[in-house]
Length: 112
Image (tube, rainbow, N blue to C red):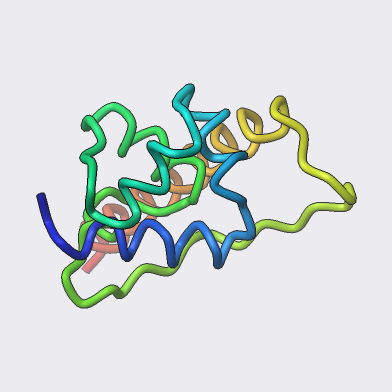
């Protein structure tokens, strides 16, 4: 396992403002599993990493970046509290935004 993956995961989770418990509920795992992953005591499957990256609004490559250069998509919420259903909506919106960002980068490459 990349030793920096858990550290990056924690940093991005904190940047976007999610608790370990919220992320755990979204991923369908126990909160202690998230804690152990962040502390490099457990590993996540590729499926869990992809799901978390979508929730955080960053690519898997960025999440695994050894330099810790991860900049998740900003989230603006009006609700005082994020519900479990909101996490699924946020992840879907982030996935769409990341795909759009990727397509725009491809278009710029083609136009050059």
